[in-house]
Amino acid sequence: MLRRSPRAALLWCAALVIALVTALWVGGTLASLRRQDTRYGNVVELVVARHDLPIGRVITGADLSMVHARGAARPPGALTERGDATGRVLVVAVLRGQAVTSRHLTAKGRDGRDGVVAPGRRAMRVGVADTPALHAGDHVDVYVTFDPAQIAANSDPTLTVAKAVPVLSLDATDVNTANKRTTGVTLMVDADDAPRLAYASANGVLALALVPPEEVRDPTGSR
Image 1: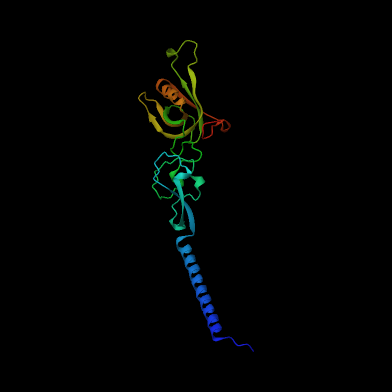
Image 2 (image 1 turned 90 degrees about the vertical axis):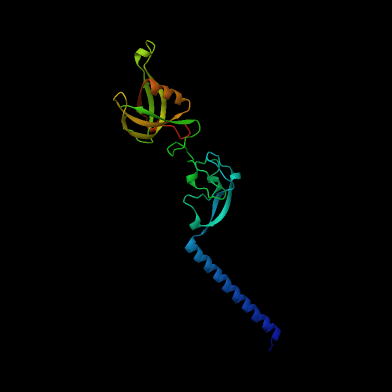
């Protein structure tokens, strides 16, 4: 029968001890990680600002970095993919190292209802008498009627100011200086329509007509 040398026996014992210590260390580490996951949340990647970012900046990939953080440290709405932020506009300044959240950014389809006006558009409030039953999100055609005595003979006193524009909000009904009840309506119009709407509001009587859903504009202003 072969007999192991004392040196070989010592090496086997050392290997067993090392294996046992390693197993205990690994098991302890895994248990610690599980406890941390339970207590603080799983590790996630977060999008953070690489440098200070001002309001109105269009985000690019160079503005962003990725960091690892525990889930419990993740702010509400924090982004986990750079692509979710690139190309969008900041409505709140973000400091270097701060997590970028959906609340810092404009909506992907900007229709103005979040308070951020899209390029080429203008939000305007006008007073309108006898409006139809309107709600924010409805789309309307805007008409103006001028006093026939102030326009050329045989001219139509009613003109179209803007077509299929969204209603952003409605104010409580007010009484103006002519003792007529008007409702304040905030509309999102094209920049080119804004001067016409301002002139019409100052010099004529405005009327709104609800537009069918099939004729509404998308958030970029195209049909």
